[in-house]
Image 1 (cartoon, rainbow, N blue to C red):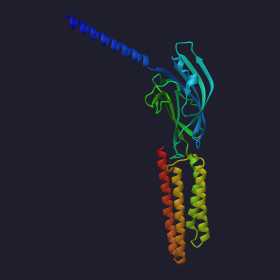
Image 2 (cartoon, rainbow, N blue to C red):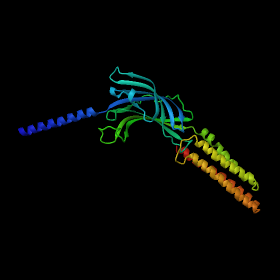
Image 3 (cartoon, rainbow, N blue to C red):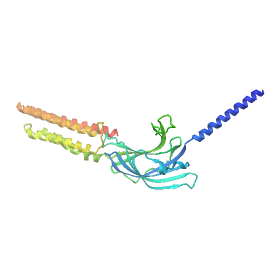
Image 4 (cartoon, one colour):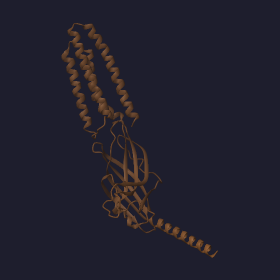
Length: 325
């Protein structure tokens, strides 16, 4: 009996010691929470070709650990430049409170497949450059608005505004000899703002020259087939005008390896103008064979097929771009 009692007591003490040590270890290694909020006052200087924009915002953080020192350790991973125009620090209470005004020039990736019927996501994120996710995690302050509803973006509509917190992995140890694997994780506070372009006016501004060039070439069907110089002069001139229009548009866009709406519409127009040139050659061939009625009948059928097919294909590509943005 005594041995059983001693064994039970010993087992209880061991379990208690294990529980206490594990609880103490968990308490010791639990990361501190940084409560973070943001209020965007303006977004401007959107440079589509350089893939950057400027954002002005207020950022506030509340936490206990004084070593975090966000005034010095604030990291904005996607920023080209970060300018701190104002900051205030309150350490009078149990928590440290920091409020700062930032102006950041952000680099981001633009999706131009459906340009100008595109939508974009502007991303902003912060981290602490000195403390990883084992020491620091973020929690979002979701009270109130997160951007000024009065500010507007020229040519854009503001859509969803999302705030998330989590961790960001880096496949490197940053030279830390204590880490056995080249892997680090840092707490992150992320903001995503969706923008949709007001595209109708911009679309016609960019493509009106291309469509005029097509219709100039299209007029050839109504010029007598014997007027070789007029027909070929208009067609070749329209071809060069479309090529020039594409180069002008491409100069304002970032480089892309995909086939975009701009490429599709210009390629389609060039193909149809080339088709008009081929039709002119065939009509001239009929005239030389003195088949004047056949040439007129061919022109009459060709312009209907050309115009109908061109309008339908343009409508299809534009519809896909609008619905797919």
